[in-house]
Length: 388
Image (cartoon, rainbow, N blue to C red; front, side, top):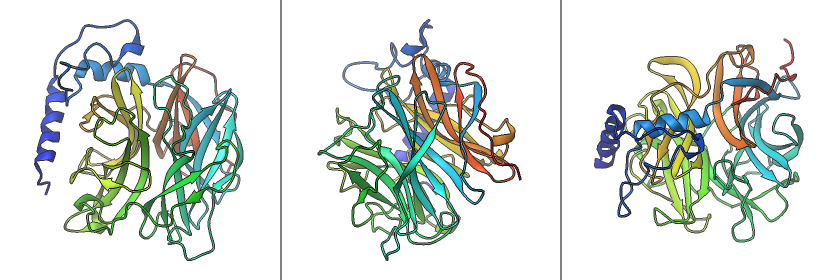
C-alpha cells in the first residue's frame, strides 16, 4: 500500500487536473503552449497544470504522420531500442542500444536531416571482465539542452560529456540485478569511442535507502541540468524501476527521482514515485521544456485496461517535482505492420517547424527497430525489417 503524504498529495493533484484547474483563453500560436497561465503568482509555482495547458501541449507535440523505420538491426539476432537524439553543427546524432542475446551495448548513428541515418560505431561495449556491468551497458544522453526547438546540444560539465546507463553482469534480456551507472568522456561525442565509467553504480535496488517501489531492479534514467536549481540541486535524474514492499519480483514499474551536485554522487529525492499508474510499466522518462512547462515523455505498457499494449504518453510540470498526467489520446501507439506489437520509448525534438517523435517499433515477429513519426507529412521511409 502507498503510505506517504507525498503520494496523497500526488493523487489529489491528479484528481484536480482531471476535473480542470482553471481555464485559459485560446492562443493562436502553439509555441506559447506553456505560457500565459503557468504561474499564479511570483511567490509560488502551481503543482497542477490546468487542462487547457495540457491540451495545448498535446497540440504542440503531437505527430500524426508515421514516416516509418529509420534504423533496423544489421542481423536478425539483434534488436534496437531507446533512441536519444542530439545535434552538433549542422548534423544530428543518435545514441541507441542494441541487444544481441548476451545483453545491451550502446551505439551511435548520424544524420543530415533526422530521417536518413547511418550507424557509425559503438560507444559502450561488453567487457570480458568481472565488472558489475560487464554484460549490460544501456546508455542515455545526460545534460542535453532541453529547450523545445532549441539547439539540442550535448552540454559539457566539468570539461566532460556525461551519460547515465543501466548496467549489469547477468547475460540475457534485462536479466539479473540492473543498476544505474554514470559514464563520461572528454572526447568528441559525435565520434564513436569507448566511454569511461565510474567504478561503481550510483543507484542500486539493493541500496539501504532503496524505496519500496525500486527494490527489485532499476532501468532507464534521464538526467537534466537545471541551472536554476529549482529543487536545490543542479542535476536531476528521472528513472524507472521495479519493486514492491511485499513481493519485489512481482512489482510494477514506476518513475522516481534522484538528485546530485556533481554527477558522481546521487541521492534519492522522494520516498514515493513521482509518476505511477499502479499497473504494468510507467517508464523511460525524457524531459523537454516548452515555454515554462516541463514535459515528460514516457511510455506505458500492460496497463489494466490495455494489458497487451505499449504506447507513448506525456505528463507536465511547472516545478520538476509535481507532475500532471495527460488524460487524452496517446502520442504514439501501434498502427502499422512494423510496430503492430509495441510502439513505445520516446525521444521528441522540434526542428525547422517540424516535430520528430522517435520511438522503438516492434512487430509481431519480434523484430525491433527505431522509427519516427512527424507533425507534418514528410513521405514514407524506404527502410524495412528483413523478411522472415
